[in-house]
Amino acid sequence: MLACLPIVAWAEGQRIDVARFSQGDLKGWQTKVFSGKTFYALRKEGDRTVLHADSNAAASGLYRETSIDLGKTPILNWTWKVDNILTGNDERTKAGDDYPARVYVVFSGGAMFWRTRAINYVWSNKQPTGSSWFNAFTSNAGMIAVESGVSRTGQWIQINRDVLADYRRIFGEEPGAVDAVAIMTDTDNTGASATAWYGDIWFTAK
Image (cartoon, rainbow, N blue to C red; front, top):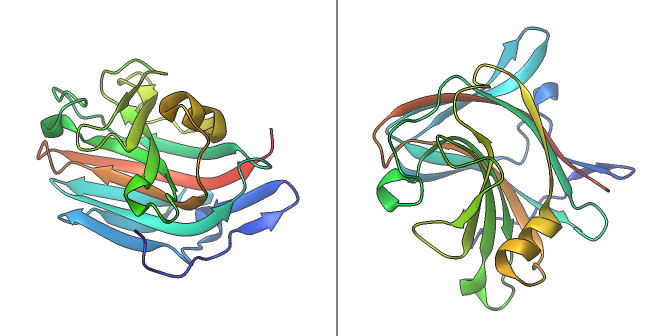
C-alpha cells in the first residue's frame, strides 16, 4: 500500500496530466526502491526536457499518487525511448522479470488491501507486441507488451492505451480506484544494464 497522502493530478478539460517532465516538473513524484537504485534525472534532449533513467543491476521506480476516473478519462498516453533492450531473459519467469522501460497503473483494492492490482505496460525483449501475461511474482500484476525487440530502439514513440479495457480483459472484472502511476527501468534480476527516456504522461477521454 502507498503510505503518502494522494496528490491530485493536474487537469485541463478532458486531459489529466500525471507527469509534466517537459516542464521540468517532478512535483509529487516519489522513489520506491526494490533492489538497488535506478538513477532518474531530468535532462534536455534537443529542445525539450525529458526524464532519463539509468539502471545497472538495480530496480527502483518513481511513482505519483493520483486520482483518475477511468469512466471519464480511460486513455493513458505517454512517450518513451530506450537505448537498448535486455536480451536472453524470459520475462515470464522470476529470473527474467526485467524491462528497460515500463509504465504502470496501480489500482486500489479498497478495504481488501491484498487485492491491490497493477497493469504494467512494458518494452519487452521478445514477447510479441500486444501480448499479455501475469507477473512471475504475483497474479495481481498484469503485464502488457506495448513494444518489443530492437527495431524501434533509439526512437521516440507515443503510446496510447485504454486502461479500463485492458483491466477488464486481464482481470475479468471492473477496476478499483486508480491510486498511482509509476515508471521503472529495472535490471536487478538479470544483472544487466539499461537506459531509457520518459516523456510526459497523461490521461484523456476516448
